[in-house]
Length: 477
Ligand code: FES
Image (cartoon, rainbow, N blue to C red; front, top):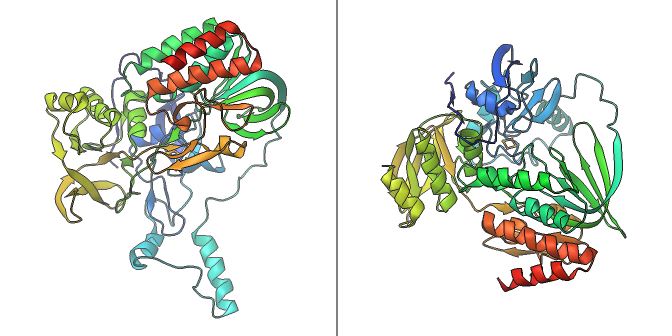
């Protein structure tokens, strides 16, 4: 089993490793660190295949490391379908893979994928005879599904904590932190909900310029103003309409039922993987996942790493990997200029220009990728790489705002965005939106839109000439 590699934690890293712990993985004792996600500890230990896909039993591994895909699902302490990228290591945990026969590592049912050609239409199979159909149903249920029910009785329901607040801000990225700070600076009490363990969103990415310093500044500023109650690892689950909005959120220990006069939604984006053949092979990551893995948790899953993308942030990530002495297979980009590209060239990173990725190759983990010229379908270059970072436009996480009643609109470039006016007001009178779900395309723009929405929200709660002037001066630019 190839090992991942742990590197020295970069300076200023907000992801601190806790003490060493040991946990059980399918009969083996593995080492991780307190607070480190299980998925990271497993990759550091060389675990490649985390599970199998439901139908074709194709190998699965972590893709996003932000709780947005299902590549890292495992059975933890007898409970199925736990996202191991969101579950911190704890001493004595029992972790198992939950799909595949006889195991996810060596799964004979992979033959379904290899033998079925282009597709397997299970809806029309074995329907001629009812007996055959029942047998087929039984076999299919045995072959597919996501894990067995929990071994222990369900826990008693978590307690509900009810309280009220002037405003709730959902998402503690650049926009949410900025909105919460602004609102509370205007004298309103605010509840800030963050689904992840750490505040900062994209500011946590090692490739975001000065991101880590800015998180520290935000932390100090937020701690210095009264009136912000922060709950991390507490995703918002639902928003119910009414004279006051009812926001439901929950974490492991508690459910929160918050009555709020206003809501600011700053839920950011999801990472996506672009379409190409075998894009689901373990070893293929989104840029933010690789950033979090290497720059944040200081674990290199495999080398050499190929980086494919156009955005400054993706090119900066490649530079960051090189600075951290990660072996790079190169960078595939159509960019011909820009500081990020120049800096890569200065670092002697091999650049493959005008090409795109058309196919990934490998059995249970990535081995190679095939590249083609932009204008061609035919691959003309094969590169050895054991990990690949591929960029696709991020998808705005608009769903919660939409379910709460805000109108969204589709653009082919950005996907679904929440409709807002210049002040971040949505089509719902009590709800504002800021950051990437409202169209910001950079961390700085997100922080500004958070501030604007915070001011407008504060004004909607209480008219104040000073706040109005501040908002007007921001609008003028
Ligand atoms: S949900 Fe865990 S890696 Fe995507």
